[in-house]
Image (cartoon, rainbow, N blue to C red; front, side, top):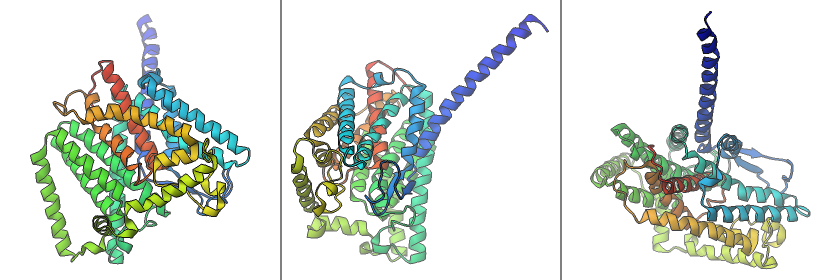
Length: 447
């Protein structure tokens, strides 16, 4: 054996080791992308740690995305300079909110142990933004993540639409004009509140990234999952998610400069839908989504959005019990038992005021204003080309998603607080901020 042969063997082993670990890192990002979007929930009952089973009769429901957070932490620990992917102002307000909420939870945990659990629930979604910001700093890692995210989104949408179709086929229609909550996911709020807005922003993100890539197969795949998601949002009758879905779709058509092709596709979808309606003798009143929007237009009392003012007033009344700290992470129903269980005011900002007091609200509004300022700048500028710098296009894709969620959080839903949709939204916030920092450093990437 020659000297060269002796020296070459360790070199090959070392190289193979590096390739092995690099592959594992990429697979980790693929797994995160695949799992974070799948709407699977685990229902926990009984007393576990700081959680008391007596707080909610239905038990504690945890989305699969919560279990992805440790994988995100593993991925971040293998990187470097993670914090530099954010702006200093965002870090200041976010860390300030973390510290404030944890302090409230610790102080209230002396008398109500569950307060610390709620404190953790409020801040957990924010950690996804760290991963999103670090993700765009590595082109190969982002591609691997997106492949997993795309597969998870396609599978989830197809399963939800298929189950709705099976339900309509075997039961002769949708019970109450909408997809049954227990058909796939146990519990009312998981399917009707958590999942629709999460699936809407996930599909729109996939469609936006696919539009960047060359090739008709990517465009057709984007159109297919967009159409399937529209069907799901209609059968589940989620107004907030439908409004976001349609509004951002119109924005994408504007920035992609593909209006003729898009109009042709929309006409085709409408024509196909018309054929299905005629063939099945479908009546609009059989679908709750049509009924909901018609009631908004004609102003029927029971579904007017203004009727939620009473819920906000109720939240503010509870807040006045302690104007400095709010409920300090203690469930409002525990602070004032006569109100019963009161989980949300259907307004994220009022919820922050109620649970974390004015200091918490100021910190959250600081975050929202900083992000909105940069997002609005991209929203007002039409890109020269879809196939330019991938970071520019990522900002154009995520900016409307973020702004729309900020808007509907005012009265329609509280997606940033809900476990499943909250992690997705803060992931996109991190991707937006990471891409923005990359642009400021002059980086150019391809998606």
